[in-house]
Picture 1 (tube, rainbow, N blue to C red):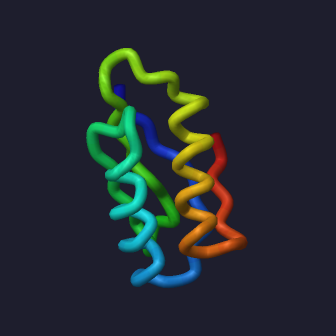
Picture 2: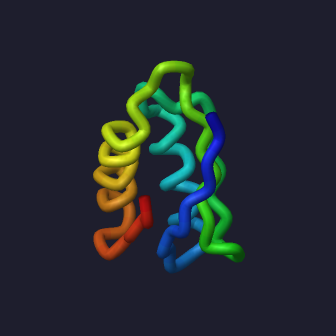
Length: 72
């Protein structure tokens, strides 16, 4: 399953760090963060719990940028 989320990210470098961190999370098949569009596109592994995985994604992104927000 592939989904797009609105994300608040302040710079392209942070967006790349968030993308890298997100791609390491269990349940994520692939993730792309677009600084310009302020969007995150996530493809989940089959059977992954979207809400639980996205909670972990938000935690990882907040380690990069404390004020990061993802609408899910």
